[in-house]
Length: 258
Image 1 (cartoon, helix red, strand yellow):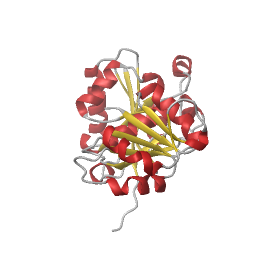
Image 2 (image 1 turned 90 degrees about the vertical axis):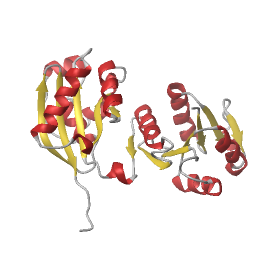
Image 3 (image 1 turned 45 degrees about the vertical axis):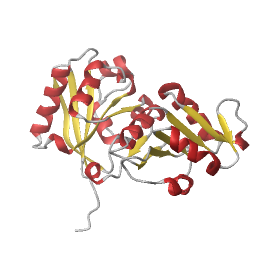
Image 4 (image 1 turned 60 degrees about the vertical axis):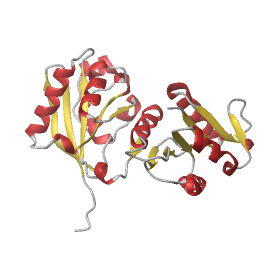
């Protein structure tokens, strides 16, 4: 399932290079950039039909308006259209734009966000209703069983059903942790990996540990991770330790029409 990266600026091209290095795929760029690698185009309308036919996943690095106008004439149905996401050239947000569930754009948004250190924005109704974000820290080599038990115990403490969990946030250094990846697969809960710098510059004043600071470079993981990976968060479970895992829970506060 190859990915096409489409960009119109040098900043976007730089992000595309990072994404290609980690996720594979091909870069399409506006000819004004003058890059040496990739496929150049004078007008995106001249290349988007071929990209649409060949690629199952498309990442626009630029304004969402350009992405919408580019793909609008090609839309057929959510069951056959490619997954399309849009990332701003500042690398701050990644929007799941088209074919969120059926085409895998929601998962693609998380994959792109984890490379760029951005926040994924998912607007499909079933995901938007999920209001719990898990912050998780763990020892190296922690088992799937311990992680799962810790998560279920944490949720039980605040009487929250696991179906309300939107994602699990942890440190970027845990990207290859087998137990954590297995937990995500089994429970079908996305993982969001935060860079150390985000936690170190967090606006939240939280208790930390010199031991954790020495081990992973930040004074705390679980509490800042769940808060930083949430929208208008409320900490509903402070740091809870279970075996080789530390967990905290945040609830997102949504505006209501009621």
